[in-house]
Image (cartoon, rainbow, N blue to C red; front, side, top):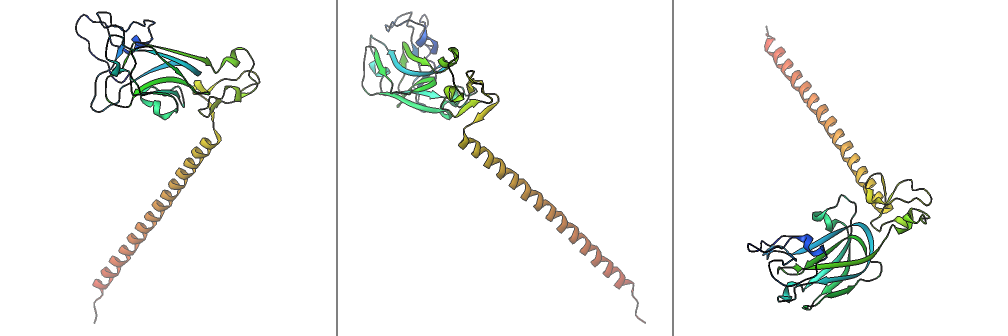
Length: 245
Protein backbone atom coordinates (compact mmCIF):
# COMPACT_ATOMS: atom_id res chain seq x y z
CA UNK A 1 0.00 0.00 0.00
CA UNK A 2 1.29 3.46 -0.83
CA UNK A 3 0.74 4.81 2.71
CA UNK A 4 -1.16 4.05 5.92
CA UNK A 5 -3.52 6.44 7.70
CA UNK A 6 -2.92 6.91 11.44
CA UNK A 7 -6.33 6.57 13.16
CA UNK A 8 -7.39 8.29 16.37
CA UNK A 9 -6.58 6.49 19.60
CA UNK A 10 -8.92 3.58 20.24
CA UNK A 11 -9.59 2.82 16.57
CA UNK A 12 -8.30 -0.33 14.90
CA UNK A 13 -7.42 0.39 11.30
CA UNK A 14 -5.89 1.04 8.69
CA UNK A 15 -3.21 -1.42 7.56
CA UNK A 16 -3.18 -2.98 4.10
CA UNK A 17 -3.92 -6.51 5.35
CA UNK A 18 -7.33 -5.37 6.61
CA UNK A 19 -8.51 -5.46 2.99
CA UNK A 20 -7.99 -9.24 2.92
CA UNK A 21 -8.95 -10.30 6.45
CA UNK A 22 -12.39 -11.67 5.51
CA UNK A 23 -14.22 -8.86 7.33
CA UNK A 24 -16.57 -7.06 4.96
CA UNK A 25 -18.04 -4.55 7.41
CA UNK A 26 -17.76 -1.00 6.15
CA UNK A 27 -18.99 0.92 9.19
CA UNK A 28 -16.73 3.34 11.02
CA UNK A 29 -16.14 2.58 14.68
CA UNK A 30 -13.50 1.30 17.07
CA UNK A 31 -13.23 -1.78 14.86
CA UNK A 32 -13.07 -0.01 11.50
CA UNK A 33 -11.30 -2.88 9.77
CA UNK A 34 -10.48 -1.28 6.43
CA UNK A 35 -7.27 -0.45 4.61
CA UNK A 36 -6.93 3.34 4.50
CA UNK A 37 -4.26 5.45 2.78
CA UNK A 38 -3.17 9.00 3.54
CA UNK A 39 -4.04 11.99 1.37
CA UNK A 40 -0.99 13.00 -0.63
CA UNK A 41 -0.05 15.99 -2.75
CA UNK A 42 2.49 14.04 -4.77
CA UNK A 43 1.50 10.36 -4.95
CA UNK A 44 -1.51 8.53 -6.33
CA UNK A 45 -2.75 6.18 -3.58
CA UNK A 46 -2.59 2.46 -4.34
CA UNK A 47 -3.15 -0.89 -2.67
CA UNK A 48 -1.81 -4.20 -3.97
CA UNK A 49 -1.84 -7.87 -3.07
CA UNK A 50 0.60 -10.66 -3.92
CA UNK A 51 -1.38 -13.78 -4.86
CA UNK A 52 1.74 -15.94 -4.39
CA UNK A 53 1.06 -17.58 -7.75
CA UNK A 54 0.08 -16.64 -11.29
CA UNK A 55 -3.66 -16.66 -11.91
CA UNK A 56 -6.08 -16.11 -14.74
CA UNK A 57 -8.25 -13.50 -12.98
CA UNK A 58 -11.93 -13.38 -13.93
CA UNK A 59 -13.95 -11.85 -11.08
CA UNK A 60 -13.16 -9.29 -8.36
CA UNK A 61 -15.43 -7.97 -5.58
CA UNK A 62 -14.43 -4.77 -3.75
CA UNK A 63 -16.16 -3.63 -0.53
CA UNK A 64 -15.88 -0.01 0.60
CA UNK A 65 -17.26 2.12 3.41
CA UNK A 66 -21.03 1.95 3.76
CA UNK A 67 -21.57 4.79 6.26
CA UNK A 68 -20.16 7.64 4.19
CA UNK A 69 -17.37 8.81 1.92
CA UNK A 70 -18.09 7.03 -1.38
CA UNK A 71 -15.44 9.32 -2.87
CA UNK A 72 -12.84 7.15 -1.13
CA UNK A 73 -13.51 4.34 -3.59
CA UNK A 74 -13.86 5.94 -7.02
CA UNK A 75 -11.71 7.06 -9.94
CA UNK A 76 -9.40 4.06 -9.68
CA UNK A 77 -7.93 1.41 -11.96
CA UNK A 78 -7.86 -2.31 -11.22
CA UNK A 79 -4.63 -3.73 -12.65
CA UNK A 80 -3.40 -7.30 -12.81
CA UNK A 81 0.38 -7.42 -13.08
CA UNK A 82 2.60 -10.18 -14.40
CA UNK A 83 6.06 -9.64 -12.89
CA UNK A 84 9.19 -10.31 -14.91
CA UNK A 85 10.48 -12.27 -11.94
CA UNK A 86 9.64 -13.04 -8.31
CA UNK A 87 12.39 -10.64 -7.33
CA UNK A 88 10.02 -7.84 -8.46
CA UNK A 89 8.35 -6.47 -5.36
CA UNK A 90 5.97 -3.59 -4.64
CA UNK A 91 8.28 -0.84 -5.84
CA UNK A 92 9.08 -2.72 -9.05
CA UNK A 93 5.58 -3.62 -10.19
CA UNK A 94 5.70 -1.25 -13.15
CA UNK A 95 8.55 -3.31 -14.59
CA UNK A 96 6.09 -6.15 -15.25
CA UNK A 97 3.31 -6.55 -17.80
CA UNK A 98 0.12 -4.78 -16.68
CA UNK A 99 -3.35 -5.95 -17.70
CA UNK A 100 -6.09 -3.37 -17.36
CA UNK A 101 -9.01 -5.14 -15.71
CA UNK A 102 -11.34 -2.23 -14.89
CA UNK A 103 -11.72 1.50 -14.35
CA UNK A 104 -14.20 2.66 -11.70
CA UNK A 105 -15.51 6.10 -12.65
CA UNK A 106 -18.63 6.32 -10.48
CA UNK A 107 -19.15 6.38 -6.72
CA UNK A 108 -20.77 3.44 -4.98
CA UNK A 109 -21.59 2.57 -1.35
CA UNK A 110 -22.30 -1.04 -2.21
CA UNK A 111 -20.08 -3.89 -3.28
CA UNK A 112 -18.32 -3.24 -6.60
CA UNK A 113 -18.29 -6.32 -8.83
CA UNK A 114 -15.73 -6.42 -11.62
CA UNK A 115 -15.48 -8.88 -14.49
CA UNK A 116 -11.98 -8.84 -15.96
CA UNK A 117 -11.47 -9.33 -19.71
CA UNK A 118 -10.41 -12.80 -20.88
CA UNK A 119 -6.73 -13.70 -20.44
CA UNK A 120 -6.19 -11.20 -17.62
CA UNK A 121 -3.27 -12.94 -15.96
CA UNK A 122 -0.79 -12.10 -13.27
CA UNK A 123 0.48 -12.52 -9.75
CA UNK A 124 -0.25 -9.05 -8.34
CA UNK A 125 -3.55 -7.17 -8.25
CA UNK A 126 -3.30 -3.42 -7.74
CA UNK A 127 -5.99 -0.84 -7.04
CA UNK A 128 -4.66 2.61 -7.97
CA UNK A 129 -6.43 5.96 -7.92
CA UNK A 130 -6.02 8.45 -10.74
CA UNK A 131 -6.07 11.36 -8.26
CA UNK A 132 -4.59 12.04 -4.81
CA UNK A 133 -7.71 11.40 -2.67
CA UNK A 134 -7.68 8.77 0.09
CA UNK A 135 -8.19 5.17 -0.98
CA UNK A 136 -10.25 3.04 1.42
CA UNK A 137 -10.85 -0.68 0.85
CA UNK A 138 -12.69 -2.72 3.48
CA UNK A 139 -12.41 -6.05 1.69
CA UNK A 140 -11.40 -7.38 -1.70
CA UNK A 141 -12.23 -10.84 -3.07
CA UNK A 142 -10.34 -12.11 -6.11
CA UNK A 143 -11.46 -15.13 -8.10
CA UNK A 144 -9.27 -16.87 -10.67
CA UNK A 145 -7.64 -20.05 -11.89
CA UNK A 146 -3.98 -20.90 -11.17
CA UNK A 147 -2.05 -21.05 -14.42
CA UNK A 148 0.11 -23.92 -13.18
CA UNK A 149 -2.92 -26.20 -12.61
CA UNK A 150 -1.74 -28.35 -15.55
CA UNK A 151 1.48 -28.98 -13.69
CA UNK A 152 -0.32 -30.31 -10.60
CA UNK A 153 -2.37 -32.67 -12.78
CA UNK A 154 0.75 -33.83 -14.73
CA UNK A 155 -0.89 -32.63 -17.94
CA UNK A 156 1.80 -30.21 -19.09
CA UNK A 157 3.01 -31.17 -22.56
CA UNK A 158 5.84 -28.69 -22.86
CA UNK A 159 7.28 -25.58 -21.31
CA UNK A 160 4.74 -23.61 -23.37
CA UNK A 161 2.05 -24.89 -20.96
CA UNK A 162 3.66 -23.03 -18.09
CA UNK A 163 4.96 -20.08 -20.06
CA UNK A 164 3.77 -17.09 -18.06
CA UNK A 165 3.45 -14.37 -20.68
CA UNK A 166 6.29 -12.54 -19.03
CA UNK A 167 8.55 -14.21 -21.59
CA UNK A 168 10.22 -16.61 -19.17
CA UNK A 169 10.23 -20.37 -18.68
CA UNK A 170 12.67 -22.57 -16.83
CA UNK A 171 15.48 -24.17 -18.83
CA UNK A 172 15.48 -27.93 -19.61
CA UNK A 173 11.78 -28.44 -19.01
CA UNK A 174 11.03 -32.23 -19.19
CA UNK A 175 7.90 -33.60 -20.85
CA UNK A 176 4.99 -33.23 -18.44
CA UNK A 177 7.16 -31.62 -15.72
CA UNK A 178 7.16 -27.98 -16.68
CA UNK A 179 8.51 -25.57 -14.07
CA UNK A 180 7.61 -21.91 -14.35
CA UNK A 181 10.08 -19.06 -14.15
CA UNK A 182 8.61 -17.91 -10.86
CA UNK A 183 11.79 -19.55 -9.55
CA UNK A 184 13.87 -16.83 -11.21
CA UNK A 185 16.97 -19.05 -11.32
CA UNK A 186 18.33 -20.64 -14.48
CA UNK A 187 15.78 -19.18 -16.90
CA UNK A 188 15.62 -19.05 -20.65
CA UNK A 189 14.48 -15.67 -21.87
CA UNK A 190 12.14 -14.81 -24.68
CA UNK A 191 14.04 -14.75 -28.03
CA UNK A 192 13.58 -11.02 -28.43
CA UNK A 193 14.73 -10.35 -24.89
CA UNK A 194 17.66 -12.72 -25.37
CA UNK A 195 18.64 -10.83 -28.54
CA UNK A 196 18.53 -7.54 -26.62
CA UNK A 197 20.78 -9.03 -23.94
CA UNK A 198 23.19 -10.38 -26.57
CA UNK A 199 23.25 -7.05 -28.42
CA UNK A 200 24.01 -5.23 -25.18
CA UNK A 201 26.80 -7.67 -24.37
CA UNK A 202 28.28 -7.28 -27.86
CA UNK A 203 28.08 -3.50 -27.56
CA UNK A 204 29.89 -3.69 -24.22
CA UNK A 205 32.61 -5.89 -25.71
CA UNK A 206 33.08 -3.46 -28.61
CA UNK A 207 33.33 -0.51 -26.21
CA UNK A 208 35.91 -2.38 -24.12
CA UNK A 209 37.83 -3.26 -27.28
CA UNK A 210 37.81 0.36 -28.49
CA UNK A 211 38.86 1.56 -25.05
CA UNK A 212 41.74 -0.93 -24.95
CA UNK A 213 42.89 0.20 -28.41
CA UNK A 214 42.67 3.84 -27.34
CA UNK A 215 44.75 3.15 -24.23
CA UNK A 216 47.34 1.27 -26.31
CA UNK A 217 47.55 4.10 -28.85
CA UNK A 218 47.82 6.65 -26.04
CA UNK A 219 50.69 4.75 -24.43
CA UNK A 220 52.45 4.50 -27.81
CA UNK A 221 52.00 8.23 -28.34
CA UNK A 222 53.32 9.05 -24.89
CA UNK A 223 56.33 6.77 -25.45
CA UNK A 224 57.05 8.39 -28.81
CA UNK A 225 56.80 11.87 -27.29
CA UNK A 226 59.21 10.80 -24.53
CA UNK A 227 61.68 9.44 -27.08
CA UNK A 228 61.47 12.61 -29.19
CA UNK A 229 61.95 14.75 -26.08
CA UNK A 230 64.99 12.68 -25.02
CA UNK A 231 66.49 12.95 -28.49
CA UNK A 232 65.94 16.70 -28.52
CA UNK A 233 67.65 17.08 -25.13
CA UNK A 234 70.52 14.94 -26.35
CA UNK A 235 70.99 17.17 -29.42
CA UNK A 236 70.96 20.32 -27.27
CA UNK A 237 73.51 18.82 -24.90
CA UNK A 238 75.77 17.76 -27.75
CA UNK A 239 75.48 21.17 -29.41
CA UNK A 240 76.36 22.85 -26.12
CA UNK A 241 79.50 20.74 -25.83
CA UNK A 242 80.67 21.59 -29.34
CA UNK A 243 83.39 24.30 -29.27
CA UNK A 244 84.25 25.74 -32.68
CA UNK A 245 87.95 26.56 -33.31
